[in-house]
Length: 161
Image (cartoon, rainbow, N blue to C red; front, side, top):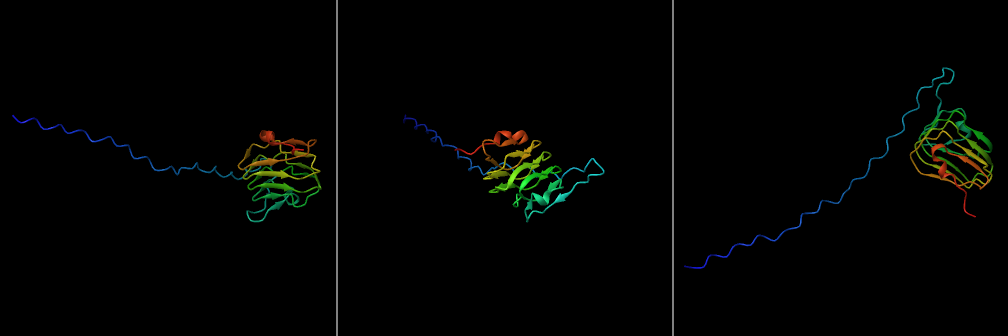
């Protein structure tokens, strides 16, 4: 009898097709919600500014919210924004040697970042109710300056010598 036909060998294993490169990126954080209605009938919310023109510190006096960016605008001396609770853009205070104290103790939320840099005479920075910052934080103060950024106080720093 003729020899049996050879057994067919199984096909060589194939490597699985790699999945396509991931293009997943996490979604951006949700936007800040508008300020809540004031609980005091004598203090209605005061919304200042817009998204295209920065609001200066002096223009923000009396505001509960700033819709765009907040800048120093050449402010001098002591600035206390007692009513400010929300800034929907960035806060930028830089290269202003006339500013000695900046206090925003009711500020809770910043929709962008915070930059406080190169203000040689700024002896005090206080944002002690700060709970949410959606951008970066960069703060450089003189070694003798006081700094309180609420939940973000670890970002207070002194420039290297």
